[in-house]
Length: 398
Ligand SMILES: Cc1cc2nc3c(=O)[nH]c(=O)nc-3n(C[C@H](O)[C@H](O)[C@H](O)COP(=O)(O)O)c2cc1C
Image (cartoon, rainbow, N blue to C red):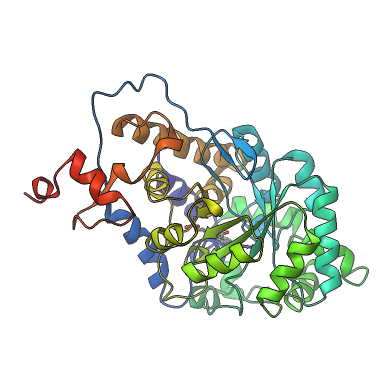
């Protein structure tokens, strides 16, 4: 019924070490919890007696039209939850007509995914070897993909204590305890024995011949993270002629700087709570970023979305588009391509329901007039005036 139901099915099917990799955050997981709380503190202000018989949530973002205002965020090494999970997610995205963002740590190649889902985007972690970055960008362009996403919120590897405790540490050699726990999830074990540790396909051609899947993860870790700088972004901008997006922006000044570098869009994100445990929640950072860059940059958001109402809230607060990471990953872990489709259709149906219930038949018309918070505080420019008109704040408090 809900994304949380898919999460529970995934938890039952996956060995703890893999479920924890998918679910966990950094350190105390304060950021992970705060992402959810930040959404939950917002409340929508419905308008009634509006004709909502025809509802439409299709959206154009960075020159591409999609059937819903959300896409699938990049998730590295996702084939650990199910063999070829990247491909299954791409298939689901293509069927649902939403973008799939290929992870820089993908276990399927750019070329294969582009064939399955030609409207995919590619997420890149800059490599220490600049030649490798250039070659990857060329491959993305040759595959016909239009949008490059550069993730900026991994200047260093974070400390994911849950992962370390449950045994997800390179070079990925399971301890006896991990093997014994995994044996309680025979469906996953049979799949894993059949396919083994997945290869990070995009890096295979740069590693020495016959590199094993395990050694390839170490090769990749020797390349990423590379030193981060605005100069590196400017260089990528010169090399990449398609749409360029920075993922992981939280500060309005960084969004303004992105604009000056010729970037087309930003994804306001804290990596789903997996990097800086005290990072602000993207939904809280969003209004300041929208104020700083307005329509000159396509502002998108991810982190913490589990409901259609979260998507509507982000759009009301100024995001043009959003991404979901764990939600479709729970789906693919729980039920392969059908599970991923299920996750997307749950979110799509919930967006439709919310839009209908608040009297906003077109998702592109969502805006600050539809939102309030329990404390009555205005969070986006123009909100107070809209709310005052629709519903005096004093009345809500009473
Ligand atoms: C298992 C997993 C792997 C991820 N791998 C990547 C990655 O390779 N590149 C990246 O930019 N973000 C990665 N992320 C972050 C997601 O793209 C996205 O920002 C985050 O999942 C959004 O939060 P949500 O899971 O609450 O929707 C990963 C997230 C998860 C859960």
